[in-house]
Image (tube, rainbow, N blue to C red; front, side, top):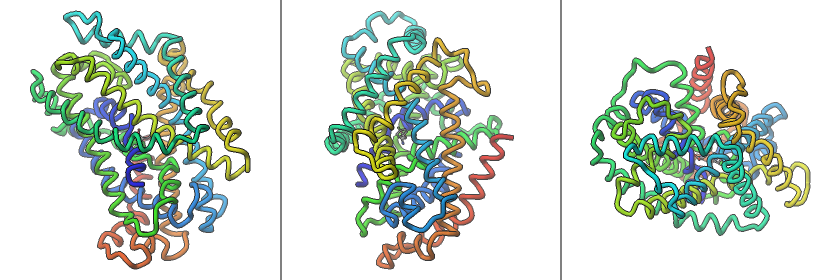
Length: 439
Ligand code: PFF
């Protein structure tokens, strides 16, 4: 089960989103704030979700209900599923890009006409691809269909098992790329940007971005971990699990930074107006170009990334399907269709917002970026505040300490500080960051 939790957590969030957000927020200082968010808030909020799920034995709404939460509190469970859904809608588009890059790596098209100026070749290629109307949309739709197939075919377990094998391979691959990046011409400048904090670029927005990224990457506030932990056996050490999952997830993100930023500096992408969302798709092919066996590395990487992303999308969709089945007592087929069919409309709109619909903005953001910001920087923190307040103050007495200590059989020195964080620090700090981020 720990492997499945890692499977849900490690996905495009670490590999695609983290470097993009880190770049947009100035590098080093962001990294420190991000690590702070993961340790101080991410781990305790994860434990809050684990406790609610293992005690309530159902999805986010059902668990809270069975633990006696009123309708108002349960609506946070509902909001978490909504956040997951919005994330799923634009995440599918990026999964589509990944699969397209996998395909182009196999056919060799991606590396066919690379001129001496790699940067503009790959940047131009990505820009042209995502702003095209049909190709990215077709890839997105194919991914939705594959997800439906997996959900209906009941092969999730198989995919999970597959990913348990492939995740360590992905990890090893990242280590290889990290080592390769060490010898890039301007590697040092890359490390400096990523590791040396420049506090002058920090604003309240940096904090909300770091918080949102931490929650996105750890799959927090999406109801996923509540549902997963409802399958945890009674003797699972929740604290140890949360720390392991969070640190592994953090490690993958940091490794990505150690690959991307040396490449960004060495190949002169910095300040080139490469939009965050496309950063990885431009930089990584450049890294592969620097290695012998370019195509093989590229195929391997995009294949593993696609599998990692698939385990994440399936985990989120499955939670929504389980929830619909529970609430409305409908068949699995109906529930899958209710969850997945709207994506055929929303995801293509997200895809188009990179091209044909790029002129349509909401609060100055493209539709893609608006949904990302709304779900990640607004809904995930709001849900987490709600869950922490309910668990810390209104849940049945002793629930949290029972869960953290497995009904007294585990001695953990962390129980007290974690309880304090869940009751006081997490709600107040998340609320402060949240409010300041919007002032
Ligand atoms: N933790 C996942 C990731 O970092 O990729 C978050 C996630 C987002 C999972 C969207 C699933 C999903 F559909």
